[in-house]
Length: 173
Length: 41
Image (tube, rainbow over all chains, first blue to last red; front, top):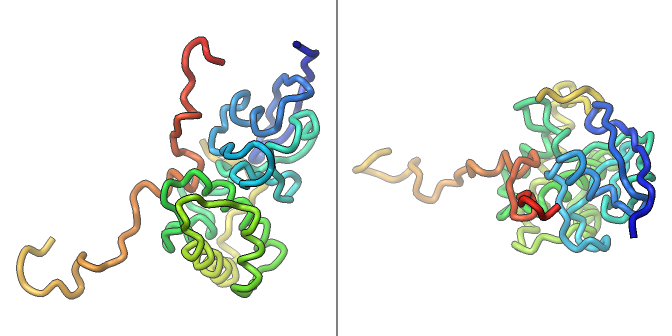
């Protein structure tokens, strides 16, 4: 069954974007297939694995559980929008330095979840980090290194807050 | 890379940053689901 497509206008990684989508189209599919931002990954497609996590108005959401039409007029940040040009965000740097990934498939979701978590809790203890990561699944079993990465990212962000890229600025292509 | 002498301070046992990680961390990784095949949209 084909239903009417709706125009969706939203801001993605600081840039205005537009597309057409049926009401049932998920934000994840809209980002990946219509806007060609394939950095957002789909693992389970039912809100369990966290791979599709993006920010909507600064809050971490599962883009597989949200419809694209619900994102109309909103501000979305994906993994492609976190670094400022070639300068990685401290969360990304910390994942790199701590070897917080193996295959990298779950990584975009982890990075976006951790980014949002550190906005709420800039100085987390390990015992707070583990529950915060519980909505993201890594099948390469890299959790210890991911916990280490969150601790390092928190240190980096507190130590160099003036150098952290501002998300709302347009990202260089 | 040194071919003789002490390995202390060399690569053996050292933690080496992976070259593939920046692309995984910036959404530039390329996975099977990212491949667009003609006629399969």
